[in-house]
Amino acid sequence: MPVHKCALLADPQGYGWEFAKGISQELKKGNNGFELNKIDIKRFKDGEIKPKIELNVRKRNCYFIHNPNSRPADWFLELCLINQGLKKSSAQEIINVFPYLKFSRQDRKDESRVPISASVVADVISLYADRVLTIDFHNSSIDGFYTVPVDNLSSYPVVIKHLKENHPKILENLVIMSTDAGGAPRAKAFAKKLGITEVAVGYKSRERANEVESFKILGDIKDKNVFIVDDMVDTGGTLIKACEYAKNAGALKTYGYCTHGLFTEGVKKVTDCFDLFFVGDTLKLPETPGKNVEIISFIPLFAEAIYRTSEGESLSELFN
Image (cartoon, rainbow, N blue to C red; front, side, top):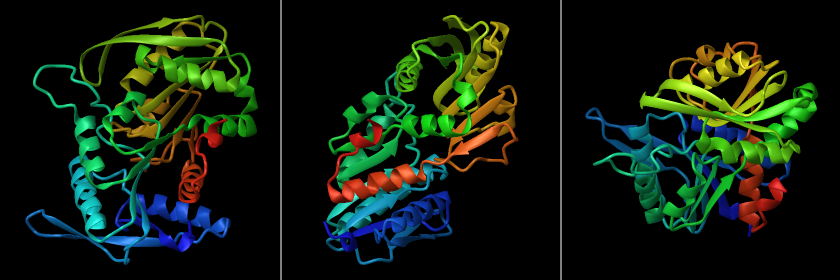
């Protein structure tokens, strides 16, 4: 597939542009000429928006890198209109690239008279786009909502490489811990990549969203280093509770990792209780983090995935 038939597209007014610019720079290192192009979004006084794709995209494979830091309602509307604009402009293939896929937490009907919002997003994407590229779904079963191919990248190989190269001592006497039962497969997968057999699981109960009522840990973590993994952190209540309970249960040191850092009540509130906390760059953090926070970049991973997609090469090889 000729490289000049591919185009990177993003709105220059948000973090998506910064993320897309990084991808473009990574691709240029390998002399892969993916030029980054603007999508201008005109905003009317009454709140309506009108996106315009500056590049002629006819017969091009278009990688639309969406701004992960947009307000959810704006994110969804921009997604709908830009995808339709690309379709109407005769793009050959439309690939939606999501550093963070919003609404993915709403992946089931957990009470009466509520939508399965992740399914709604999938329906709208499938209407116009041809493929989705993202990282660390909240629930891997979300893939089933889509009628188009979905490439859900795993962040763990990048994180493990970072730990081995920069913090090898963390990997000594280590237990991988999930904050809840739903994340246990995630923790087990992480441990397997590290060659670790010991996994602990937290069990929480809530009365309402973002408020953890009680917490228990299944697994032996006494006199061990505990590495708590999760796909995302919102208010961070669960992570804080998990960290506190791990310390009370005799953990030597506590480390944390999440792919997507929303930190809606601040970064330091969550990370200050950890000896060291790692977070992906899929979202721009709401504040400058403390010295015990390290940001792991997934821009090179996305760049490689985009190149492999354009060339028809395997993505699974990235994680073997």
